[in-house]
Image 1 (cartoon, one colour):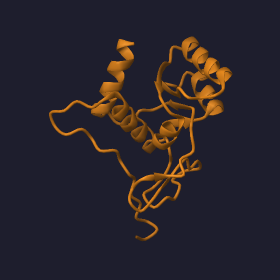
Image 2 (spheres, one colour):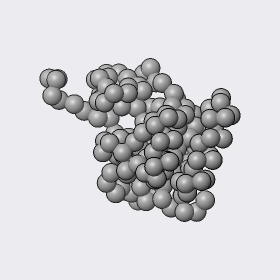
Image 3 (spheres, one colour):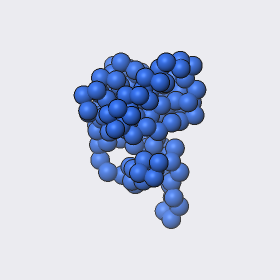
Image 4 (spheres, helix red, strand yellow):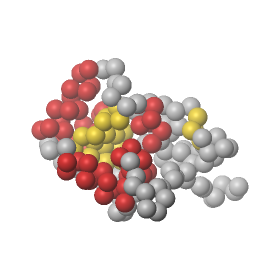
Length: 152
């Protein structure tokens, strides 16, 4: 593999005829947003995006051990009418929002995980908050996420 050959690991889409669950759809949406440069990670960057009214969706980890962190993000989302979705684990969110190539090299400035030769995430760093500023392109996963947001 030469230095120019970069393979981004994409989650498998649901087979035809089967519906995708919310977490798989959210993973696809985060990957597309990351690929289009529309994803910010962390409290500081997320709060800036929300306050500038650039945020379209906020994703938080339920297992965050900082109650003030959770209250602040929830309050910002409520004040600025930003949809909020919770995921069970910060490690899972870090893997989904991770900025890795299949060979483990970072694609941007923040590398939240490394992908081994078998395509499995290793050394995943947790991420408690991710904000989507730009969804990128429309996907079936995006429609599932948007339907979930409308219904809640």
